[in-house]
Image 1 (cartoon, protein in one colour):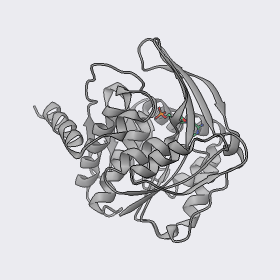
Image 2 (cartoon, rainbow, N blue to C red):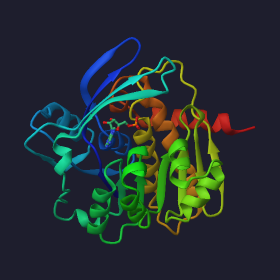
Image 3 (cartoon, rainbow, N blue to C red):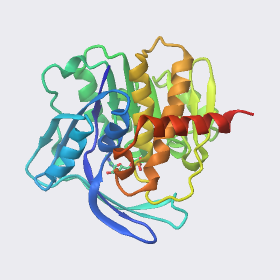
Image 4 (tube, rainbow, N blue to C red):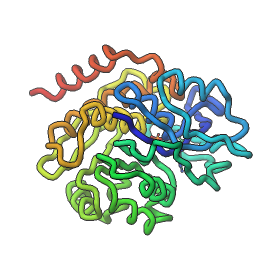
Length: 302
Ligand code: AMP
């Protein structure tokens, strides 16, 4: 079962207390693809600039990611820059340079319209709507968003939310979108906007799943050292959606497959902060992932 992802394929400049890494491979679609490709075939729709290194495209392709939908346009690749606080959780965005992203009009390669799973990664909601429109009856549509779009393009976001089955967002974004303080109330309000299921990520405190018939709280795995947490949310999404695709889930599936997908998402996300950029996702084996899922299950068993 394949997954189509539309999102940023980017260069990130990341500063921590001890290091600064310039223009390394990042972007929501890159992290997502490298995680989801452990479970299912992934097709990426995105845009890069003339400065994008061929070796970075080769890296995605070498992990089995289909990059036929990534076009190279005149101009510079989307560039995001951030600086982490000493706690390695809070961060300040120093720059968001849209580059070729500004005029991005996604084009789907022939045959991709029938892809059964659609992940709309963090990107302008009008672009998310346009990709949604081109897919014929996907089994599941999953969406990630961020403060920027909730604050600046709410009408477009509300339109895309009506077509979405699962929304992933963090706790601050859930409060902002719903206007509610409590997360259960926030999830209920968001479910009224369209998505039948809502996943609220809480960083080092794990993630909450709110479905039609159940709620699940999954803790985060405790990591000895955090090198660079950038992309952990997208990596979570890759494990979550990858699990659903591998299981052949659809909107009529029972709660169990969505609850199990929460474990795969959490397990994948736990690798991401162990190194800069996408490094920790490249050499992962099935045993590595199963080992983290087993650790999680042990943490969740009284
Ligand atoms: P996360 O740490 O999960 O929030 O994801 C960080 C990734 O999102 C980085 O690799 C950035 O390149 C990408 N990113 C940051 N801002 C945006 C934006 N406005 N649109 C699309 N991608 C973004």
